[in-house]
Figure 1 (tube, rainbow, N blue to C red):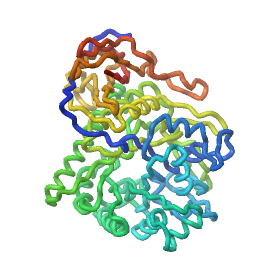
Figure 2 (cartoon, one colour):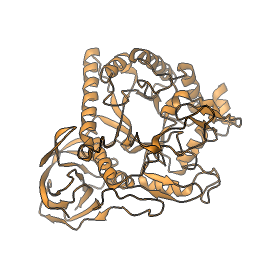
Figure 3 (cartoon, helix red, strand yellow):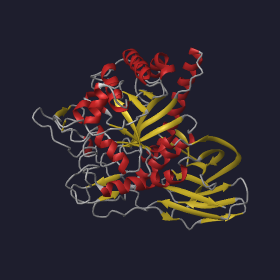
Figure 4 (tube, rainbow, N blue to C red):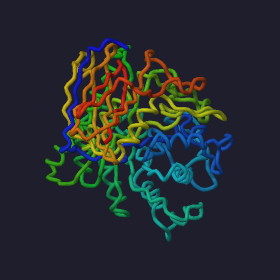
Length: 505
C-alpha cells in the first residue's frame, strides 16, 4: 500500500435528507449495436438458451447487477428504425446506417417484453424515431404497444401474440438530435417543434405518459445550454425529463484528470438544472422537469473496438463493436460517476448505464461460450443493492485536494452517504489519488451503530481486468483497515480505489 498522505472527513447529519433515490437511477441500455442483442442477451443456439432464445447465463448476471429500467432500442440506431420491422412474422433485413451493420429484426418489441419478464419485470423505456420519422409513427407505436384492443394496431399486436398491452410509461422523444452524426439530426428549433407536437399528440392518447426530451449529446457540444433552453422553452409543460449523455476516457494519457471525471458530470448536471429552473421562471411554470441521465459510462471512443465497418458491400451482422475491456482504473472512475449521480438525486430521477452486454458493458459474452463480469459490474451491483429506494443524506466532506490539468484543483476523495431500506448506512467512496492512500473518517449521526463492513475494489496493477481466460481477476475484497468506535468510522482507502462502507446497528 502507498504512503498515507491524503486526509478526508465525512460528517453525516441524520436529520437532513437531500432526496430519495428513484429506482430508475439504476437503469441500463440495450441498443441494436454490435453484439448487445445478438449473442448478447439473445442467442437461440446457446447451451443456456431458453425457449425464447434468451441466454440464461446473461439473465442471471443481469439480475445480480440489479438494473431496473431498460432503455430500448437506441441510441443512434433508433433514428433510422422502423418499429414495424420488429413485430410479426415477416421481418425484413435492413441496413443499419448508424453502425454500418445489417439488422435482421429477429429481435423486436415482443422479444424485449418477454426478456424483461424473464429478468424480473424490469421497466421498459421506449425510444421513438424522430430522425427519419415523426409524430404519426410515434402515435402508431404507442397505439400498438399500449391500447388494450379494438383498433387496427392493437388488434395487430394481439394477433402477433401479445393479448395484454405492454403498458410502456416512459418514452424518449428521439435520440441525440443535436449531433451531426445522427440520422435526421436537427437544429434546436426544428427539433423543439417536432418534439412538442409529438409530446402533445402522445399525451392526447395517454396524459399519464412520462416523456423524455433530448438534451445535448455531451457537456462539450458547441450548442450546449442554448439547445436546452430552446427545446425546453417549446416543450416544458408537456415533458417530464430532459436527457444528459456523457462518456469519459483518458485524453492524451492524462490519467490524473480521468480519475476526476465526476467533476465534469457534476458540473453538467448543475448546468442543465440551472437551465431548467431559468426556463420555468421565464414561463412562470410550476411544472417539474427532471434529468434523465440516460447514457453514461467510460468509453474509449477512439480505440480500435469502437471503429465501425466501412464499404458499400460490407454490412456485417452483429459485428464486434465498442467491446472495451475495463480495468481497475476504469471501474474506479465508473464508481465515481455513480457517486455523482447519487449526490444529485434531487435533480436526476432516471439514469441508464450504456450499455448492458458486450457494448461498453459490465457484462461480456462469447458466442456459444461463457458470460462474465467486467470490473465495472461490481460498483454498479453493490451500489444498486444498497442504494435502490434509499435516501441521500446531506453531508459535509473535507478532503485533501490535488491539481489536474483538465479540472484544476479537485478533492482527492469523493463520497456520498445514503440511508438504506433497512435503516443502515452506506457510504460509497473513491480515492482519486494516483499514488497516495487516503485516511478516511466518517462521523455518524449517532453512536447506535455496532458493525462496519468495507469492500474495496483495488489492485496494485490499475490496468488489471477480467477476461474470458481470467474472469475473476478483479473483484471487491474485504478491507480490513476499518474500525468503528462510538460514532466514528475510520478506514484506509488505497490509491485508485472504490469502496462501499456498510454501517449497521
